[in-house]
Length: 229
Image (cartoon, rainbow, N blue to C red; front, side, top):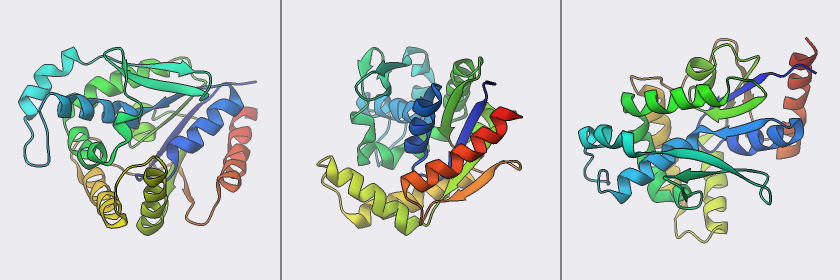
């Protein structure tokens, strides 16, 4: 059966990673969470006092990029690869709201994007990969056989994200999560380098009123069409 590249882009909290993990597991493909890569760089910057809600030392971050090593190590119990920053598992730390509030600023830095895009292209050179992010179908894999663009209303995305964070024990308010979702949309869609846009040949999926199984079944049909052609 033909191996393809599946590129999933879209707004924050649209379930891109959940869908990508489902597809990768079902197809036996490699899954790459590019959002985790940007979050890991953000976490590094926070730990080294390079960024906060009040300051951002962009030049120092650029100089420190050489000291940032990212890799994914497969966790058989979870069924996907967890991200490691300089050989330390930071999968849980990078999901906190504090990181979410700053990650879009990190993603605006061209030097950060160049470093991570180069690594992402290497991950997918042999196809049989599912990758999700903001610029996968437009920049990383413009020739991907299947491109999806995920969207949902900001209200629904915030509700999903809020419930996810609360289930993990994070002390957050819905208002804080909603504000984060809206602000990330604004920054991601308007940055100069690789803004979040729908690729011309991407299929848009609004999952505001779809559950995970309905969404998965819809996408698998699209995958089968590409694999058979």
